[in-house]
Every structure is written in C-alpha cells, then in structure tokens.
Image (cartoon, one colour):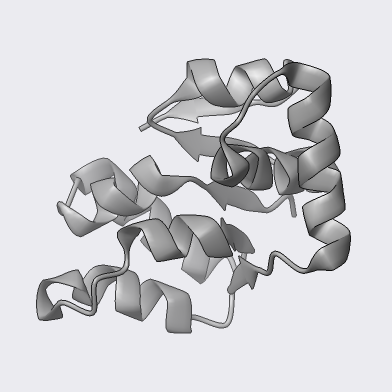
Length: 125
C-alpha cells in the first residue's frame, strides 16, 4: 500500500483537530498504511505542549516514520534545491520521500512543494 507524506500543514491541521485530517489518520492507522514525516517538519511543529497530544500520539504509532536528515539525504535535498532554485530545505525533504515512495503529499502549500517536483500527487489540507 502506498504511504502518505505529511508536511507541516498536515500536522498543524491535525493539531487543530481538523475533522478531515483526524479521520484520515485514523483510517491510515487502521489500514497499517505508512505515514512519512520529515524530521524538519516534526521540528517545525513540535513545541512539547500538552495541547499537541494528537501529534504526540501520531508519531508514536508504528505506522509513522520520521524521515531523518542524514548526510546522504542532505546531499539529495541540496541537489534538489539546486535544480529547482528553491531554498526551503524542509519542503525539499518533504518532496524527496514523496518521489521515492511515489506517495501523495498532504500539504497546505502545494505550490511550493509542486515547484520542487511537478510529478508529485499533492493533496491540499
């Protein structure tokens, strides 16, 4: 089953208790479908606030993978930024697993993610 990639907007929507996101996460978990979250996305939203219980629960789920930004991935991110003339490291780190897994990307910013890879399936949240 194809994974889903979440960007910052997807996690913020979940944190704000967006009904659509809540149902999507529940269904994805029940299906044991992988959710991929960039480590940069996680860092952007995480504030260790008790009100973030939905995000805390999500990242503890066995079907969630926090995608690390190690040296090898950093090189791919940098090359993608150079090819596209973009500067947002986190957006590029979201686009890469979307491309790698041929996975839909749930994003509140489809224009920026789409500039990095026009072949990605983008779902606006």
